[in-house]
Amino acid sequence: MGTVFILWDENSTSNILTAPIIDDNPGWGWARENALALIGTYASLLYLTPIIGGWVADKITGYRIAVVIGCTIMTLGHASMALETTTTFYIGLALLIIGTGFFKPNITSIISEMYKGKESKKDGAYTIFYMGVNAGAFFGMMLCGYLAENFGWSWGFGLAGIFMFLGMLQFWLAGSLFGSVGAKPSKVYEVELPQNINEESPADSSANQTEEKLNPFTLFDKVLIILSSVGGLLYLFNDPLEKIGGTNLLPFQIGNLSGSNVVVLCALVLFLILLVTRISRYIKVVRDKIIAVSIFGIFTVFFFAFFEQSLGSMTLFARDYTERDLIGNSAMIFKIIDALLTTVPLIIITWVLVLLAKKTFSRIGLSNIILGIAFAGLWFLVIFRLADKFSQEGNEVDATWFGILNSFFIITLAPLFSRWWESKYNPSAAMKYGIGLILLRLGFAFLSYGASEIPSGAKTASVSMIFLIFAYLLHTMGELCISPVGLSYLSKLVPPRMIGFMFGVWYLAIAVGQKAAGTMGGMIDKISEQYSLGTFFLIFTLIPIGVGIISIVLNPLLKKLMHGVR
Image (cartoon, rainbow, N blue to C red):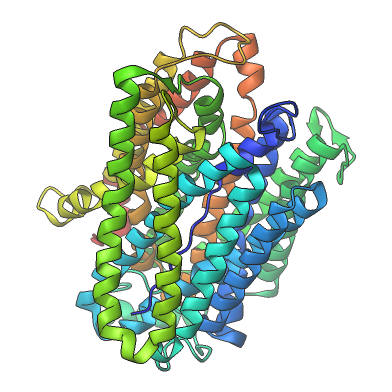
């Protein structure tokens, strides 16, 4: 199978926006609330455009061409952001959103299609892919963040664009290896995640098929979809426009509610009407299963609303409130750990790719050469970074360095969690959600305790980095309890005719969580000034544990609604 290795770094976006205008590495000096409003909208759209990108690939382009289109657009997006003007920055974000829509759903569809009829190998293929994604995030945040913080923001964005282009070129040149896989549009959109979708008896299957034929999308359904979508998008765009530029697309008010809040609430009500009326038209067993999926979707919104603080408030905490200047033995110990953390994974990945190149060079030699150039550049940058760090007397840990912890912990802990899920101690879906949310709560409890001594209104502090490291560890463990569960259960519980719709609903839930994360993270200044930064993170401690306990309490009900699906 071909390899596409791409670097990216999302944390630099919040840093360049909020960094002081007068500084060694000047940023734009935005208020944190404004910056996180934009990041929340950006992160939400990254989960909405794949719904459109998957449809375009299915109907028009095919998966492989869609991936190339996506990578090309994202390359232009990074190049645009590297110019560091307001206009090109917004253009760059728009291009990244569009490019992700083409890339994200279709690269996984290619893997699914490659392993049709080889179901026993599919889990391994997805595991390798998931590890590769996190390897790209790991090195992207480390190297792009390093260049951005130490040499200028344009260097970080530019590096991501260069590797995006090389990844696209390598993938395109490996086309002969794929044969007909992903070359032609599929006639039917398939969301192939785990196997055994809708396991049921033949009698149930027959009844469900009859019910599905009687439940097409009506004109009323389509009108509700359009109205709720327009309302949601208006809110997503209006929030940053109003806060940053003073432009209000919805200049009215009803009672104490602003026009923006009225529109998003109406969109939510319309969407709930759509979901309820559509679910009610199914037979009881199918209806119960979709209700279970919908409840898991609500828990997903809460999880990502808190988990994605890593892109906002946690990045700001790392930059402004964490002690990152190390001296003496502490600095040397960190340098050694950092060097091992960087070089050992790269050695392993390089070794694997060399073995793959030996088997595929005769068929896709030029593709392997491009990949070799990319990894030679990667090794150069890693060695350059380490040499620069070791040449310094002390050591200042880059704020973006903490962003690599999530990817590192995923790579190291995923096999352990996979073994847990395969053992006889494998908990139910509701229990996994409960455990994940409680672990998320414990991570924020560490941050709240670490920030408890910071006085109200303080803009800087020197909290030990151990609190942030433990927070990322616990958050990643929570992610491993929840992220693999949602789409897996969706594919098992939802009837075939509705799986595309519910797939979109699931990504909509994540998008809502992403926007909520930006909105709540933007309250960091107000809460820390009025109360304290410890109180800000205490809020993120209390709510997840409450939702986690609700998930555990609902376990018997959810098991009943799932009708034996495990």
